[in-house]
Image 1 (cartoon, rainbow, N blue to C red):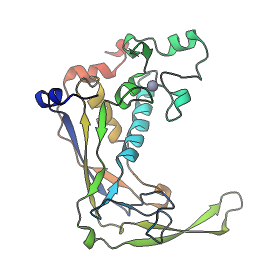
Image 2: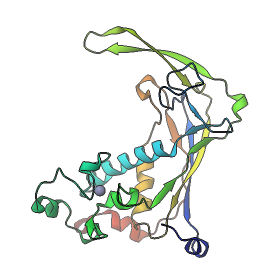
Image 3: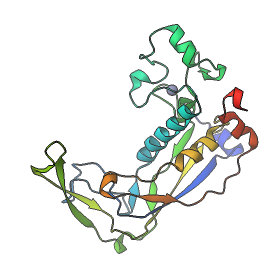
Length: 241
Ligand SMILES: [Zn+2]
């Protein structure tokens, strides 16, 4: 929970984000109404295209988990709550847990939460970072809707499957659309948060479905963020510092 007076005396730190889409963008869930396409792009109430905050958060968490494992951090397995902190039912014995999560700072609230959960949260621990939707800066009236047909391929037979033609709605190809948003850091975020999420962002090269069809490729505007040396050091396990 955030208290208003805490916010007023201590405004949130913000990481501004700008993504430029290098190919057509396909974002959205199937079955939404109001479009012919099976996978419409999401629009907000003002008609602007957007990439939902939840999608960005999920992808960034995934990339940060991969980096954390590469750094030999013990992290739980999202997104299934059973294998996430504090349950981690896949670790059977107390010894398993002790072996995997021996650092003191995993312990919060009398329960253990790995370093990724301490940033991104889990079903019982609130997230320390808040994501905004990434919103397209282009006036929606200047963006024509593009409907692309797709065909589901049967990998085994290497043929198109009968009746598996589908349609997806995308932004126009090569329009270099810019999407702008932000990540807000709550007071008391863990010290390694900024370097980890900045590194994780650099591993996100695409958002939205159909990456393999060449849709949704993007690059991030370079970030001008100060990170103190302590925070970088905290990323490394003790023996490498
Ligand atoms: Zn965890």
